[in-house]
Length: 322
Image (cartoon, rainbow, N blue to C red; front, side, top):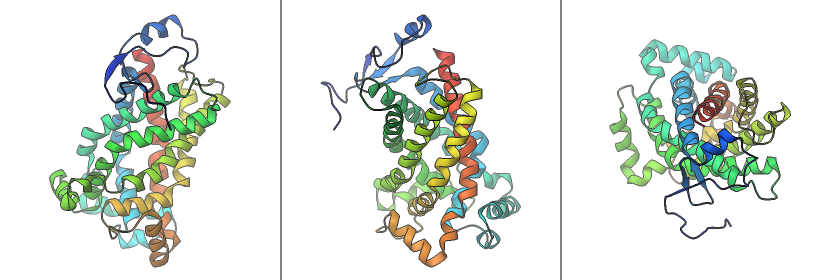
């Protein structure tokens, strides 16, 4: 349904289109003449790509252990103590103790090396696509909240092409034996062919699509409520951090049951012919509703500060490079 201009799909250098963003200052206008990649419809600016890379690296360095615990709690490979815990917070604490006791800090950083290599370009594509989509929708009649929602969903669809293989391999390493490396995880995933690396792509979109769409809509709405203005580029950390925390927490909680099912699909813990809703139903019937929410505390503690950190780092680096 999108308009595709001539030359769609060809990578070229373009100047950023005028009239799609608020009036530019002289400094911004000079930066606007710098390199932008795209087709005139979806234009990627290098400042945003670099900002996204930096945001991803900082987030992973600080919060990867919580991602490991989330994956283990979601897939049911956690310790017996964690599985019998009364609530998600207790389950998180019990699993952290169990992993640390068996593998030490190394166990909490399973799959981290892979993140260093793949997370940076995936985050660059994610934030770059969000901003490019915002600009593409800037001269339409779509309301601000709807534009941010669509731009967040578009960013997820594009970035998931890189994120899905990363998630498939990383989560297999997080829940598998301690000595399972990247090559071993790749062999396991590719038993059905290279397409195995993209197993769960659509299930992932069903989880992260609504997450990204609702997150960016809430984030931009909170920023506007705090006085940053629609699409402002000079938001301070005092605005970005609370807006990112609030939007990240709400979006994480809303999509937790979906994430539980998606994780089980990607690590091969369920039959290949089961879809997202079928896995959710299977977990509910066999293990109870609490299993769908067991990783909720880990996911919220991972994504809430993660969202605040990534958006703040992204905006700071992007502003610095302008």
